[in-house]
Length: 418
Image 1 (cartoon, rainbow, N blue to C red):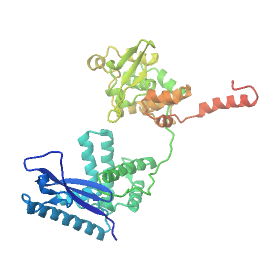
Image 2 (image 1 turned 180 degrees about the horizontal axis):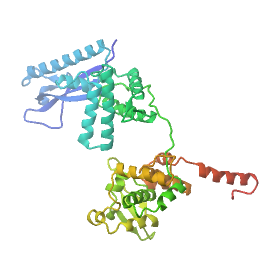
Image 3 (image 1 turned 90 degrees about the vertical axis):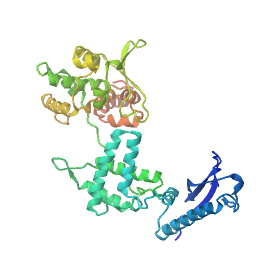
């Protein structure tokens, strides 16, 4: 069965002439894709036969150049014939690498993952994603070791192996307490594995879409956030005798007002980020989110409401403000979450795990309850898609209750007024 169609052409690169002529290039077209490379010889145009794609017999070193051309042609034919015997689909880049002695005939799943990591490190692209891909590849490595597939070629990864890896993650116990991975966490690992396979396809190491026919698992979940009453209890609790808890609470409440992520609140929020807008007679925070600087990197403008400004003024004379210019007290995420869990007990927030990231969800949810348009909230949070904002706003109880009153009044003939 013939799987691969391949053609080879030799030509002169007329872009740059040297003393001994133009470089001779080899062009390989396999399965509708192309790869080109220099064969290591030059030739003058008057010594080159364009129709035959080879040097004329009486040209300088014609026999040596023709021998190299024949060698390459013969090697291409051999590679293609071998691939057809083994029912393997070839890419022109793979043929090129093998002719030049740089090819690795069997690119394994793990070696391709390593190539992707090197690519991320080289471009310094999305460092957070890089670490996540590394974590996923550790699970892949463990799985392949158990299945005795450590050296499996990337081209041999199929639907069965993907489903087996999915099952492996489902049965895995992780962490100190041996917890199982959630469906969405498994989905994230499978999505990162898909990134590795897509990289192999884009690099022409494989032809097929490995994930064709596989559906990444995902379930919709409600993002937790504080209710208005819970937010007010946490905001109003007297912590004057516990300064450390007071600092964590202030940082959390401030992020409920402005909606920034914890990492950004600690690294990016400086005094210099505050700009006064005389047209609106108010201050704005201007910043480029850390999650965005490696792709779009557009600045966002967050209004500073009076309550948030009071927290900024509260720490005006502190050393971290005078020396480093930070708006909020320096704290670690782990310490902040420990303190917040203690405060959750005191303020009777016992139906959800209180973490610092809930401040961002709370900002979005309370703006929704305040009937602020979703698009406006998205701009406030620095979202570039409303679909992201809608995930944050998913507690509709209060809004539905208001809507029911309006609907009942309308049905009674009282219009839409409450």
